[in-house]
Image (tube, rainbow, N blue to C red; front, side, top):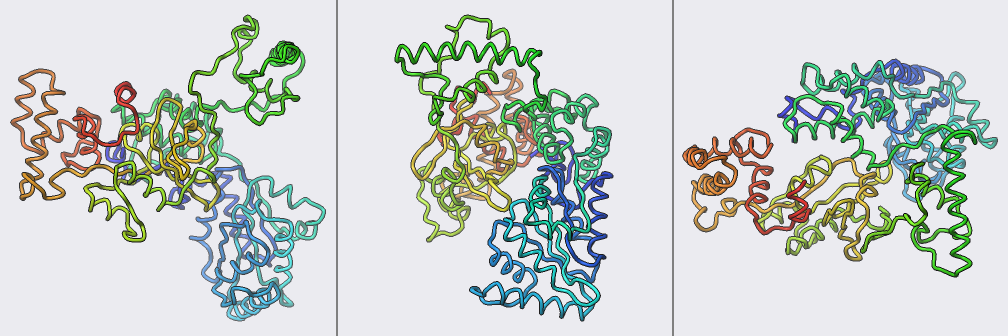
Length: 563
């Protein structure tokens, strides 16, 4: 959406593990060096750990692109498998023929034969397992046994484990001490330094085709504070900051853009501090005061046999007040503690406490399209029309697939399918039917469900799909059916829009006399769209929004008008 506005060839802050965008900080260089060293070694294990989003998978992709020619690599991305399933997956990756119901012994024998054959041909086999912290102890032990396959000179299989820091704790378990002793190289990948952030940002935008300073110094400082140097967070915040600046017509990213973007990415939740409070500080004093007041209130309620509403969420153990105190402290300032007890918050009427559970509320892509077409009053049968976007054209609609933020969804103002990542390699879809403040209505298999949007947003990395009404000239019906149909349709809409958005009657008359391309350029500039004179999907959708065309809306008219 904003690429042309800033002059990018492609998105500079995608979270996809594209090796071209790997900024080799000193830490990433060391991690890559450990991998390159490992494949030249004599087998065993290499362990690379790092916090979520620090770039482990991207380093791995870079290694895959630069691995020596004599190295054959098997890559396992979903390690939540049994020992037999993992061995079968290794056979699949190494193109070893095997029966689907083969036993562990048969699979190990097949792998051993393949390794010996590769060794004789001068080739080296490497098994890389991403998200290795999800491996069970039994599966890790089976992997250790695989490294027993060897000749008199060397081990035949090198295994690389990529995982989060808890992988080190798992390997330290007593039952895995034999495996731990076979780790020949370890490296922990930290976040990038504050001093490296400007170079990281400059590298990403230059690969995407832009030269020059895009972020102000204040924005960079705020970005580091919000991301703590974690590359994935840097990319998410930067991408949404670019979208925000584009929406405002700004060509430079400021502190305010970063602040807003960080709030969107975090869902409005403040990061928890790691500092432990002592009894002498204000935090401990706050805890003591709140605990004392709360216990007094609860005791009174129990004595009077009054139902305890308010802070007890459904499912809480009412005999344990620690969770309740934590929620109060998180939402209370010291000044509020000193206020009268009667100021307890009251939930607004109609407040919905439904917890968002991706596995429960999520749908397959096909089922999501069925729900989305239903919102448009159309019936979609995947078994009859397997391609939903082709079906959309047959019923006067079009598909649009984009990446963006909540602001993008509100701008388009159409119900959307959101793609949610709930685990590596495991996605589900939800149909976002309506947005109202912090509340999101989802169209699920069990009917509409209202949840807090921030609960959905923590699984959403910006990918969405919508349906939109095609202009009449697309269908070739009626007065717009001939070759001049597009020009006639656009010009007629521009006349209505000129009366609405032109500052004076003279300006409106001038716009009506322009050619179609210039009219579209004028309108795009008025509405903050990419000014190219082409009536594409974004332009047509906004025309329909401004002219009040009767289509399903994501945001109620009053809320849309104020956003």
